[in-house]
Length: 206
Image 1 (cartoon, helix red, strand yellow):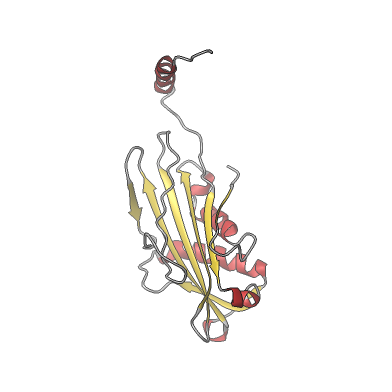
Image 2: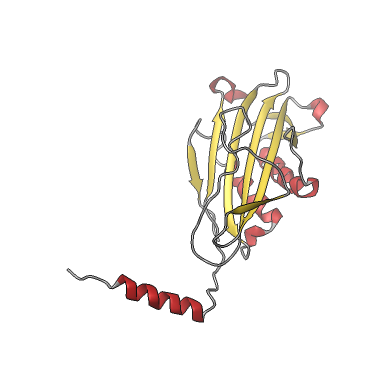
């Protein structure tokens, strides 16, 4: 059996990295998504009137969050919803966003887009803040956690909830807020409404 000298390979790789200044190409994680829904409310989803708003209790950067709300509204329209003023809507989509920057070899530090929880169950609006560590490289990583709850306006019951997370390097096209919002919203609403409680990954072309 042939044994490779891993120590020698590691030293060689380290020297090559140092000589090339460790320039890393763009990196994009898969979008990790989890969806929940009430089985008896599935027939209500994907049609009718809806209004998209900030999740209550968030202190948000309104300008940046509006980009994500627009991306979500676009996905909802493709599903068959019609966006209307709140007073005319039969359903309400509440949006929560958190973006953060991970320094190389450091823990992530949040930036001001929104606040999210770390754990949660269906209907709580929590469960955001999932960090994705791609490892390696010397680029800053920009993470986005997105949460959407669709409520029946009459009863205020949560009839669908989705959570999505993505991490991209700062030199990726998806580091741009608009592109980031588009790709994470597209993944979150793919194969809507999704399997209840199932967590899946959606690959993104770099």
